[in-house]
Length: 417
Image 1: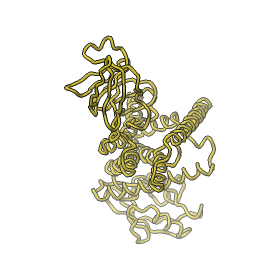
Image 2: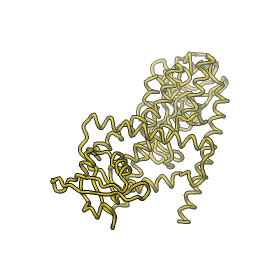
Image 3: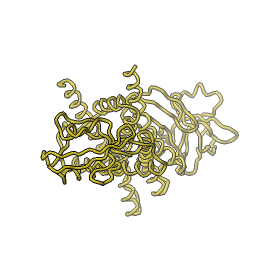
Image 4: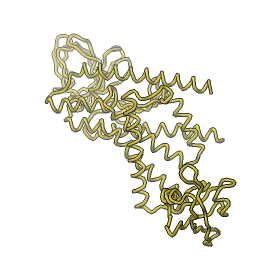
């Protein structure tokens, strides 16, 4: 049962992190008026697919990411050229369907040869029907049908490239932004689940140590040391101990709701030790404390992640320092087994990591696309789409090679134990 629950939590983690990221792209693209052709979780062959409104939603085989396919980003529409034979389905006098083939089964359509056509700006098609030339307006949501595959046309004002730099940048930045938002919510949730440190508690004592000789016991709460209130500050206690090597200290501890005075003399070991293992006793967090502590956890985690990116960029790492999908799954399983608070904290870290990683200015990542938009804003004109596509393709290939390498390394590590 535990294994099944761990598997569910692993799948849930990846699904939520990727979905919230892609939903950010999707939502702000739709707000900008961009036609979103597909909202996909995963890559590779489709496992599940359905269409709602203008968008097809798909679940794909490889759970290593996702994508939102916007009109105008890729040349996905079949081109229709003058001289080509097509069939049109009309509603009133307006074209709703353009058929590329299989004309014999289009009894409800008109067939002819294209004289002229514009499906982006003027939205019309001029057809030669046995010598009679006639022009028809095209509905802005008309469908092109080729071998029973339907593709909605994308007028220029519905394409990604037609929007302002700000609108396009927001559509791209929104993915990482949603990961940051989710990470903060999860960090705050962890504080509510785990509580906030309230008192320093003795978890155990070392045999023969000064603490054991003084009569300190597990579950004793340390109230004061040398008239200094400890509260939840372990560092304060450690500092006082190091200042009192071989000098008797007066400890006030709480045991069974009763305060007891103990005399403890730190030994001259590693700068001063009394032989206790400490733990925090927590209490329920207030709303303000949850927000404050959650934000502190997020900022410290951000510094740590950025530091690791810096080491990666300057090649200050070994191959064993890197982890791929196998190691992430392995560690996620460990965190799931440790309880919901630990699992939620790990989910927060992963969401934060995903957001920061995607903002790196590396080809194929969101950060690289934002860099190209920055160049466009400075130059006053876009970078050549063909060149940008090549850069992103090379970057994606490099990321896939790195993924394969770290996955291979993870598998070797598992085999070797």
